[in-house]
Amino acid sequence: MSHPQIVVSNLSKTYRVPQRPPGFWAAVRSMARRVTQDVPAVCDVSFTIEAGEMVGFLGPNGAGKTTALKMLAGLLHPTSGTATVDGFVPWEREAAYLKRISMVLGNKSQLMWDISPLDTFRVLAEIYRVPPAEFRTTVDELAALLDMGELLTKPTRNLSLGERMKCELVAALLHRPAVMFLDEPTLGLDVSMQRRLRAFIAEYNRRTGATVILTSHYMADVAELCPRVLLIHHGQLLYDGALRGLGERLAPFKLIRLTLDAGNGRSPEPDALLPPGAEIVARENGGLTLRVPRAGTPDLTARLLSALPVIDLSVEDPPIDAVIDQIYQEGAV
Amino acid sequence: MTNHRGGWALIQATWLSWMQYRSFFFLLAFSWMIGPLIYLLVWSTAAGGGTVGGFSRGEFVAYYLILILVNQLTISQTTWTMGELIHNGQLNRLLLYPMSPVYNTLASEFAGKAVYMLFVVPVSGGLALLLRPELHLTLANGLAFLPALALAWALSFTWGYWISLLAFWTTRADALLTVEYSLLFLLAGQVAPVALLPDALQVMAKLLPYRYMISFPVEVITGQLDGAGLLTGFALQIGWLVVALAIYRFLWRRGVRRYTAIGG
Image (cartoon, rainbow over all chains, first blue to last red; front, side, top):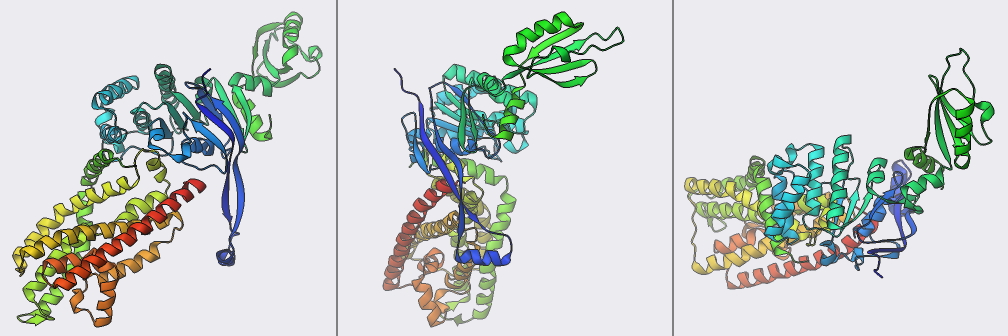
């Protein structure tokens, strides 16, 4: 039996934040006696990840996603708990570990601003000791996958945000890391560029078997890339499993969209047919949207079709965005 | 984590970047020349046809022209290259590399100095032709100058580095830097050669580290020091370097621990 590549047990991180009421005298008083407040960012989180998995960290702003990711990348010491990645304790930051991982921070660049991406790549190749032949094949391969062409030799400052993000990804992959931490890799990019980068990350994972851990605000990133999600809220792990399962667990209902024939002058009403727990949630230009308990859906669909002049009917899961928003608002699964 | 190959590649790339702003760096280098140039003119005019405190006009010119070169080679810029990275969280980037972050600072150091020299060497060469310096160079003084210069650079770099590490704890190290600059101006042979300072200041200059960052190698090459002066000078220079290294190591370990505890 193989061991999981990433093992996290009871990991917690509490930030100690200085508290200072506004105003001059408060500032003076705080010099004598520092008042601090403990802000828990990650609380007692445990999970394991197998090599080659693609896992998404979901959660609203300030949920603790980035803190968790930074601990795994060795940038933060936990307050308590343990973690091993590929057999290493991340925050010991051994050179051998740092060569096995890579981190892309969507809001921080590692490209050198005034030289071309290719020149930055050469520096990184030296830092990570990538042999020249391997360096050339890797750059060629990644540049072809991302369709980079002459981007490589333009000064970085002349590149657009999307072009720069492509280069960031290549820079992060030159040393062929076994584990990639991607923190908001598609931040600020347009839809087609997001799609492009997602396809690239999926392809890279397929080709190399690298483990990918991703945080993103864009549900589409997570939905397309990650068969498994970890939902973090207020620092706690609320859910660990398939994204689909999250929807089912959180939203025990389906949506039935219905368009009825109003040709006889009197618009028919389905109200009488609805079982308990079902309701009409929207009415717009001849269409109706019903919210129905999952279990009762097939039955009701059959009854609607036989009793009403139905032109069109569809049964859908509620959009995952709405489901997640509900958790963010309510803070519970 | 020693990684000389990565460090060397970083130096080259940093130099390439900085060369694109050479006019800015030339201006910076020029601004650092102005102080010593003014004092060169003041003291050489004061000496006129005779001497002041044993210096002739031409000797003042030689002293200050060499001081300009040494100053530009040893001047500390780590506040901008390291302190800033700690402040704005860019240190994260460096902590992810399998390479000590000091390489990044060294890269800026070497690249920057190489850019300044492109400006300072021709300019001070031109000034030398114009102002006719008087230098009685002996082989012994010339040979002693090289280690004195290397140590002056190492001391200035390490001393500046530990000060920039204060950024781990406070955003207000600037006040300390202002004091440092004043002491460098006063006690490191810029406003006047240390030999011309009043007695009390001279004692301070010889005991504190600042003289050993700039004027000590200049005093060595211009033959102002006797055997005893040379030996105590080197001893104090090395002593302060050891102190600076110890402070650096102490602050770096604690600083990184703090940084990874509170997050950048």
